[in-house]
Image (cartoon, rainbow, N blue to C red; front, side):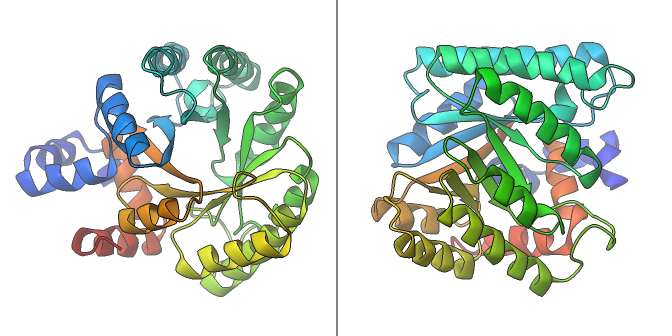
Length: 303
């Protein structure tokens, strides 16, 4: 975690040829042009995209506005490029003001509202990323506010939290889009399952709720077992292939992404970009040991 804040280590990583190759595999680039090029390539291959302009835990009001403007710009560019039907955006509320003191939540809501309006104008959607457990209630509260005017706004729920099955019940309703992931933050055992089995069992329980509900499940996993279970639940609940989707990270198991897409499954790739890629990449590795193993396996295998 200390390395994620080190400019010296960032320079060493970004300047080393091998490191640059690793970064390019998992991050689209630093600019909106990089993001658009990667998006177009993914769409041509039959995959969908959700774009994340990197940044989180913003404690500066001006930086929050810069992040908002970056989303407004990429959405306009997606519309101009004819990519907005296949690409949406993912927004961390802490990047647009949630982490600011005082009226930070109100500030984040207003910025998110502007981003949702820009998305609606080009015919696409927004999903609110979920962060550590201390922000869950705030994020779900902002989601409820946004859905009054932008009902397609999506939510992310993390299966490793004890509360998530109940949150799934609340959100498994018509028009609700829910991305279910296992979770990547280092949470205390008082609020989250600390072991893989507990998290996996919770993921399956949550998936059952979402697949049986009236909403639109977004199955965010690279785990072959969970993909198989999701497919079986879709069949059991007589879901058409346009009523749910799989989601995977850019650069992780690309052959599996293409395999599912070839089966006419909807596959959406989480595509991060921006100049804060270093912190994103290192924190994803640091927060959970399983992330490091996942990234390392991806360097030696296309699976």
